[in-house]
Image (cartoon, rainbow, N blue to C red; front, side, top):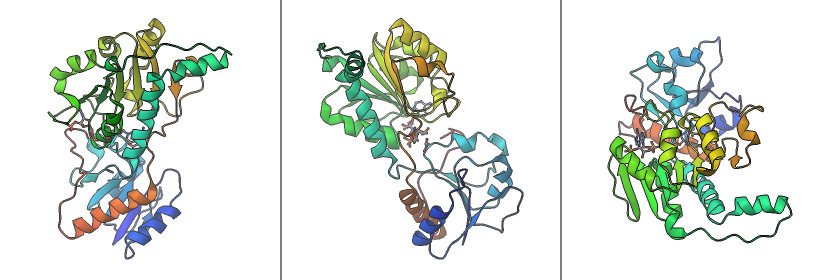
Length: 310
Ligand code: NAP
Ligand code: GLV
C-alpha cells in the first residue's frame, strides 16, 4: 500500500516514522510540486496546494490531519467528487479544547482578566463575584469537540446550553437547534463559545445582529475559525461594552497581521491557533485504523458530507 503525504511545514519525517509503526507494510510518498507521484492508495493532507488536487483524484480516500475541513473544501468543484474525504475525530484534540475553553470561562467568571489589569496598574481592589446562575455558557456546535467541552464544564455548575444543526438531548444541557432555535439560544447565553465548522451557513454567524442578542456584558470565546466572527462588529460591541471581553484563538488572516486593531484592544485575549493542536501519533493511529477498516471493506466514521460542508 502507498500513502501520499503532504505537509505544508515540510516536516514529513516524523509522520513517515509514525506511519511505519502503525502500517509497517505501507510506503509513504511525500508529495512534491512539479513531480508526478507513483500511484497511491490514500492521501494524507491538511490544506494542500491546488497543484495536488489531480493526485487526490487517484486515491481511495483523502485523510485530513485536522478536524475542520474548510482548508480542503475551499476547492469546491475542483476537488474530486468520487474520493471520500475523512477528517480527524477528536484524536486528542477534544481534551485540549476542553482545557482551553474551561480556562477562558473560569478566567472571566472569577474576573481574573480584571485582576490581571489591576495587578499591572498596582491596584488592590476585590470585585464582587459574578452570579453563577447568570453565567450561562452557550456552545455553538456540540460535535466531537463541543460535546467534550460541555462535559468538562459540567462539574462547575454553570447553566449549560448548546446549539446544533440537528436536535439533541444531553443531560444537564439545554439544547437548541436549527435557525429557529438560534435567537432563544443567544438571548440566554452569557459566555458564547464558537465550536462550529466553517460552512456557507456559519460564515460570519457571530455578527453584530447575533452578538446584540446576547445579554449586556456577554463574553465571546472563538476557537473554531476566524471567519465565524465579523471582526469589525466585535470591536464595535466591545467598545460599547455590550461584549465585556473576548478570547480569540482563530482569525480571518493568520498569523494575525501586526497592524490588526485586535492587538491594541486590552479586552481581547489572543492566542495563535493553538486551542487544539493536531497530535501526530494519535492522528496517525486514527488514520491507520481507518485505512485498515477500509481495506477490510468496513465502514468508517468521519466521512465529510460535502453538501453539509462538514
Ligand atoms: P463536528 O464534530 O463536525 O461538530 C460540529 C458541530 O457543529 C455539530 O454539533 C453540528 O451539528 C454543528 N453545526 C454544523 N453546522 C451547523 C449549523 N449550520 N447550524 C447549527 N449547528 C451546526 O466538529 P468538531 O470536531 O467538533 O470541530 C468543530 C470545529 O472546530 C472544526 O470544524 C474546526 O473548524 C474547529 N477546530 C479548531 C481548532 C483550533 O485549534 N482552533 C482545532 C480543531 C478544530 P450536528 O451535531 O447537528 O451535526
Ligand atoms: C484545526 O484548526 C483543526 O481544524 O483541526
